[in-house]
Image (tube, rainbow, N blue to C red; front, side, top):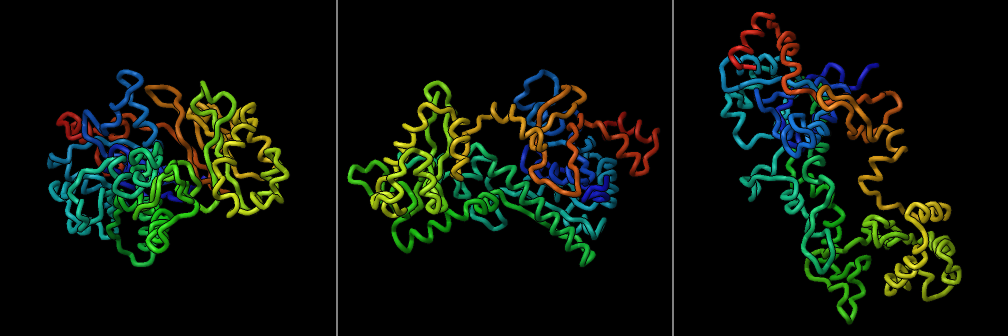
Length: 422
């Protein structure tokens, strides 16, 4: 089957998570992604958090499906020559080195353009060029803190909290993939390559736009009525508003009150909860679903404004209604009333969810060393493209075939191995 990115070759100079998430996405959709790694060691995640001794860690396998691996020592002259040939025959180079690393290798942007004027150089950065924190080394949680996510996540009486989702790493990779596809489309029009970058701080901020929205509202009005802090209680239970957007616990951020509520078994199961949203236009159904039909017309409950000062009393009642229902039983009831809700899915629930497997959102693939393993599939579904997920490559697994495609014969390849160039 024809793939969307057939014919696009990508040099993948990335490691850990943000860059590999970007290139994996493009590999899923048909790009020939050649992961260039250091001979003998490769991407550091091959060895991090191993569950099987001597086998590539799941940290690596989850982020490097559908790629080819070339080991290459770019400090050696012949290694540089191989990279030059790769640049001449590729469309995109993706890197997440520290500032100046490519220049020190001898591959400045001017040199790359000289070798291939159509090359797109895509970079993951911690902070944008010129940012006051540009010199800082950035990892996932650092990016979440710098991008506004941590300060607005958690509870009002606790510290800033980072999310379990990879808002800094994988999210940046997804943003960079969009940038690469945009640059490829622009190249179709201009015939020229360009540099593309995405800063981790910026990618996190892009997902926190509603919190920036709230900051602007707070600047103007001094309150945010959808947050638990409003109306301010005399007992100070939910805190008060300062000059910055507060942490709102599990409150809904779109003007529709919501909260995580306990279900049957919560005493022993840390994930026996559902998320329950009280949607204004669906209040009548909501009241009926939880056995309080009299609240539909009661002036104390009939409008969102009337419910605001007692919203946690309402959630408390709903929790009592949920006490004899598992999270899945509760959702089965509430879905009939069109109530926005979902069970809190543990990773164990997700691992065993048949619908996620049926949709290809999680898939089992073969690996030459570890056998079958479970990994994420494409979150994007197509009507004319079947996304096939393959196992991650062994270190240097495709070195010989990549070299052959660059014009090296078997004798030359053997010598490059002997001299530890590859």
